[in-house]
Image (tube, rainbow, N blue to C red; front, side, top):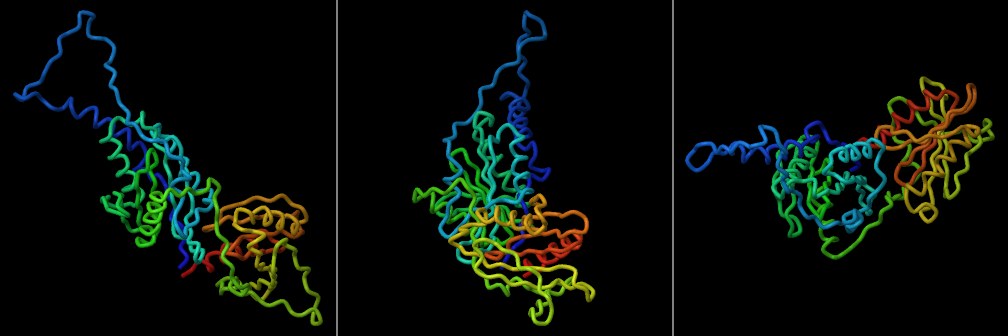
Length: 359
């Protein structure tokens, strides 16, 4: 099963959470009377009603841990996030108690399936008033990201925090100064990811700082799924009519081309490449080649990566009346769409990606 990310976002409920908790911690004692139910009154200062406010010592001591320590797990890969996911993670750092935020998309190395997203927040202990506030902060973040009621659970001999809502499950745990939250649409999958992370931590494993998205080999025919708005028609043999020039992608082991037919007309030409996993061990290594491919097909036009549905699409738009190109990845395949109308290419790409991720 391939899932479409429901991205981790602060969601208004999470913003300024700690400010509210700190306020409650400070106001709580002030609202409690003495043993006799009365109210203690401090003696007036000789200096008048104004004076310096008392300084309250605070902060908790948290062992500093590098994010690579928690981006681990047997059979798991932690890949590049979508631009929107990175922006959502960065928003957490606007609060002073969060020193940094790292997010990764989590994949199964067995079949390349997207499981969910892992968010790693480095907490600045001195900015958190006390242990009680820290505990409430952790539970509050997990509850907000899971969009449900938070509960404590035991996983791999550790206490974790789980929240389940209509959009999926979030499970978090603390490791030193790091709050790790894994979120996905499948409750079982999320639990497995966290259990494997905790097992790897106990074994002393360490991950890598650079994101790694696995490329699982697929047969080329797997690219040409039914798409409601376009029909992929085989390109006739050259003895019947001139064929379009096939593109070249370094490290491709095979290529197949088809016409994209809309309303009975050939509007686009599409190509599917199977890539060599030794040349491209991860999607991150493959991206520069995809960007170069679309630029070459669009006559050297500049490229940009844009987020479409659930992945990044590389696009290059040629001058009016010339060819434009779009390329994206599906597992171990690179899919290229080219034609004269940029808007038509974007429509085909969006519909094609939607069809590929459909269950």
